[in-house]
Amino acid sequence: KCVNIMASKPFTPEEARRIVQCLQTPAVFLNMTTDWPALHWTVEHLSTCLTERLRFRIGKRTEDMAPLFETECSYIEATIKEFLSWTANEDESLVGPFSGYHCKELWAYADYKYITQLFQDKPAMFQDVVWSDFGFPGRDGRDSTLWIGTQGANTPCHLDSYGCNLVFQIQGRKRWHLFPPDDTHCLYPTRIPYEESSVFSQVSVVQPDLKTFPAFRRARVHTVTLQPGQVLFVPRHWWHYVESVDPVTVSVNSWIEMDMDDGARVGEALTKTIVCALKSAPSLDNNDHWLNPTEVFTPAHTHTERFI
Image 1 (cartoon, one colour):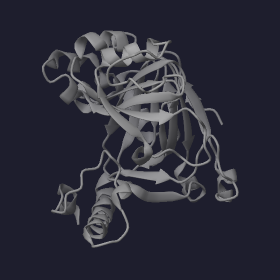
Image 2 (cartoon, one colour):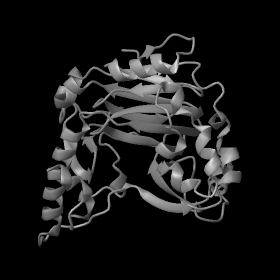
Image 3 (cartoon, helix red, strand yellow):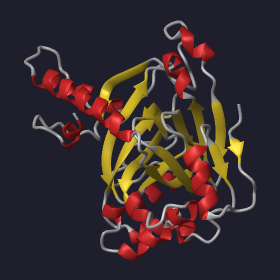
Image 4 (cartoon, one colour):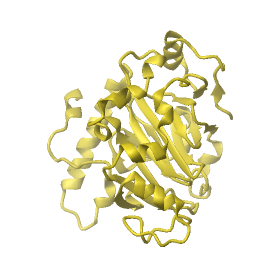
């Protein structure tokens, strides 16, 4: 199925918020960001604004019948300028953090980068992202994350436990494969690797192993290739697998909190308590792969436990 394309005329903030709060299927908003300063956040522009090193995830371009989880990737620290040099390198003679990584065989992804941390010395840039146009006053870059990747970079299929999602595409295109919550049983959910607020699928969406996961045949996929300037609305608990289509992609997203999130936080707090207990227990097995690299293991009580 194709994702709904909203009317080409821009909505008022009140109309956009009503759609976001009521719509139960994914949708693409057109012509809502034409005056957003963040439209100029190309990777070339960002390389002049961000000189600190970012953590890049490195993965193979090959399509396997098993998803490439973040626990199985390589990681390097590099500047965006070094990232740009790597993407433009043809003779593989590059020195620096990306040396030894061939850009024709591998992809790189700097994901989940909180804009408040990236631009803490340039707070004026927070205003470049104008989520208030969608009816959320005061929401801007401070409530957003930045994603920078190369062709083939992808996020394993998963659902977010909390809220809904607005995704603003700035540079390049990203292809989204989305599945409704009712198809959860077809996605074979797993909590390993564990990450609070994320439930992963065991299925490789682009190259599924249908012998191992036969129910995936019945999954109803909604696909859309998000273009620069467009905003994708991902409803609560919709599964999604995302891949970068063009040589370089840049996007910004914001998770919108919902009233029903408190119930989900109770479940996540219980899950985290169990994972922490199992992780702390003596074991002959190496359970380091249980935790996603973005998840910090703290045996002590977490803030989510206040919901129990």
